[in-house]
Amino acid sequence: MEISSCLQGGYHKPLSRQWQNQGKSLQKSMFMYPIFITDDPDASVEIKSLPNQRRWGINRLQEFLAPLVEKGLKSVILFGVPLNMKKDYRGSAADDINTPVILAIKKLKQLFPELYIACDVCLCEYTDHGHCGLLREDGSIYSHESAQRVGEVALAYAQAGADCVAPSDMMDGRILQMKRKLIDNGFGNRVLVMAYSAKFSTNLYGPFREAAGSAPSFGDRKCYQLPPNARGLARRAVQRDLNEGADIVMVKPSLPYLDVISDTAQIASDYPVACYVVSGEFAMLHAGAKAGIYDLKSIAFETHESFLRAGANIFLSYFTPEFLDWL
Image 1 (cartoon, rainbow, N blue to C red):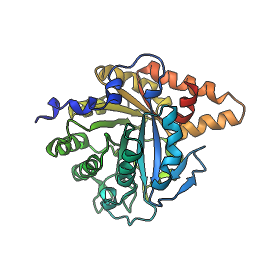
Image 2 (image 1 turned 90 degrees about the vertical axis):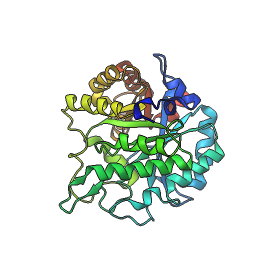
Image 3 (image 1 turned 45 degrees about the vertical axis):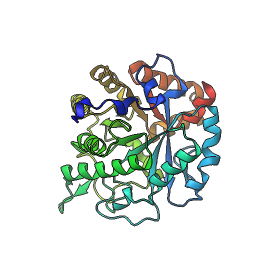
Image 4 (image 1 turned 60 degrees about the vertical axis):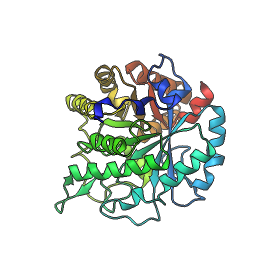
């Protein structure tokens, strides 16, 4: 099967069918909640720089998520935080059968069969160097080999029961590798690919790196994440991922990149568009509210409505629990 002819993975589940045609007002189904899963099964650990967020072990997922599902939570995206697993140069633990994400997928499918489960696909949490791909001896990226490795991890998540795989590594060609792996192994029409297409190198990832333990051990990620001034490069990256078979394209971060969200909505006019309201944005809004600059609920609505106005209709947001109450 050709990549371009495989569309069914993008609307296999009821929720992903809703994403294909959303209205112009905020709805609970638009919110996807990022969750950090660690390899201590009984963990519930506060993330100090990320207000009201915690790392969770699989044995605590029911008590944590059941009230949110009752309120209307439709989807989550899982991030692995392997604090006890051995890390190596190729991120071997990423698709180990005992990696926290794979265990969490299976657990959540048992607990909440209708919950839509997306998985962030990257190597940085699992490599001993903390970068998102495989490295040459001089520290530069093996882009093609990295994309192949990310495809292997995506397939493992699909085999565990994930509804969506979302590569955040920003390696060239990873959507093509991932889509090919899914099609060749019988998952092309069942698993959606949500591409972090316009993911920028930003100062706003700090709390996330504490949460996920994913800071690089040397250097930075500027050679594969996009430069903040690169609007044209972002447009090209979105088009590349669409050409390679992405079912949803994403912009990350959100608030400083409303122009890129708008560009993406124009380029991908026949696709759902997601944006990630990243950890630094979330912490910044909380800090302003705590300082009395504005009301937290009002600023949360104002920002998320600006993302909707710009053209996004899926929000990866740490505000998801609050919006389940507010909407």
